[in-house]
Length: 100
Image (cartoon, rainbow, N blue to C red; front, top):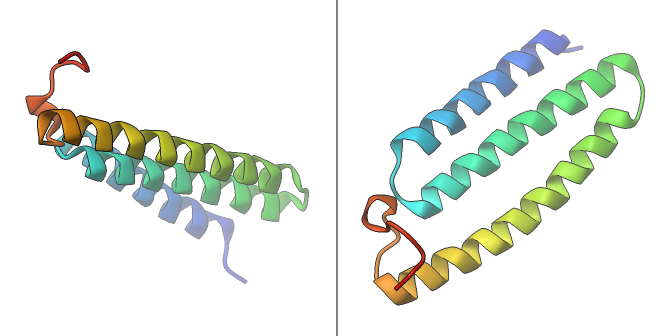
């Protein structure tokens, strides 16, 4: 049986990796992938604590986060596609606003 602390260490590492990716990378698609990585780290934390406590609340929270992540991915991808069509780039530094 794997201890809960190992899951939490893995979740912390994934969250830190995602946070560094959001802060360092300038490509909008990579930033969205790093945000998804951070959400998955939160899911891992909720599920690890739910497993330790033996209740279902953590699993329900993880399911809700998965639904929010899917909505965020679809809206974010639509924004990135619109941005690329209007500006020709998805580099965050070159885009100052959504205005033309």
